[in-house]
Amino acid sequence: MVHQGRYVDDRLEASHHRPDVTLHPPTDPGTATSFLNIRVADIERCYREGGAKGAEFLTPPIDRKVEIRCYLRNPDGYLIAVGQATGLLEGILADPPGGQG
Image (cartoon, rainbow, N blue to C red):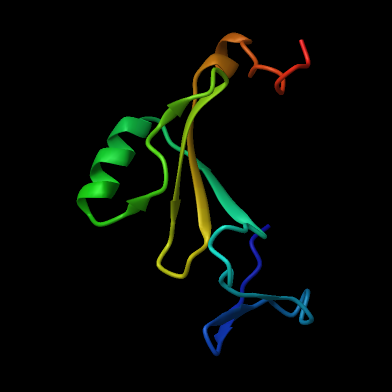
């Protein structure tokens, strides 16, 4: 379900379902309080064409076994993770965190 919202002083106010919730760009670019995660069929093309159109990627596409992923910020500063499923489609999972096997 997608909730509608409205902009109030550069903030997105949540719909009538949650009138007490507002979203705002992060004040510290080194801290993420939320992010959007999208999947694409061809991440290299997304990275190439997005960069050509002015998208500022924080990382290039990186193979993380389960997916290839990169990050960018939108003009308001929100973090966006862009991923392409790879190993997950073959039953290959990501490496466990360091030192755990």
